[in-house]
Structures are given as C-alpha cells and as structure tokens.
Image (cartoon, rainbow, N blue to C red; front, side):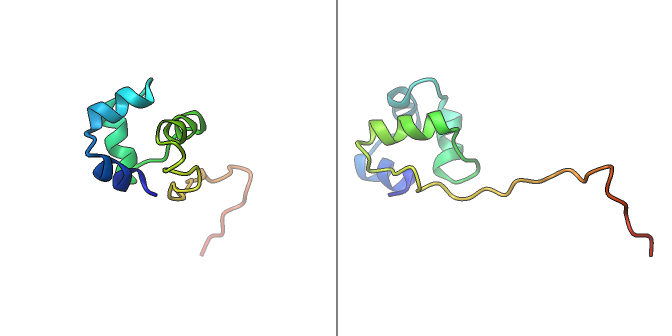
Length: 78
C-alpha cells in the first residue's frame, strides 16, 4: 500500500505520521506521500515498521537519477 493510501485509511495527518516515524518533518512526509521524493533506506524501514508492514519497502516510486556528463567523454560536434 502506498503511504498516502495508508494515511487516508488511518486518518493520519502529516504531523502525526512524522511523529510516528520519528526523525522526519511533516514537510518530508508530505513530499513522500505525494511521490515528490523517495525516502532514505532508514526512513523507508521506519515507515515499514510503524505501519506494521502495510507500506512495503517496494512501494516507493522509482526516482530518476540525473547523472552529470562525464568531462572525459568527448562530445560530438555537428
């Protein structure tokens, strides 16, 4: 189950969820529940624990990692 769905089902607001997870702000919970960012591994584990496994470790959307271009790679000139 996604975090947002869990919070709706349990009628939890961002502040309450942040307090349950611990070490995280309500702003961060908001970003996590709307998929604007992914959690650290430690935060994902804590959310998994406080939701009794309802929010699984694999429920988080894959985030794109932008890689800076390598200065050693030649660039084509057209």
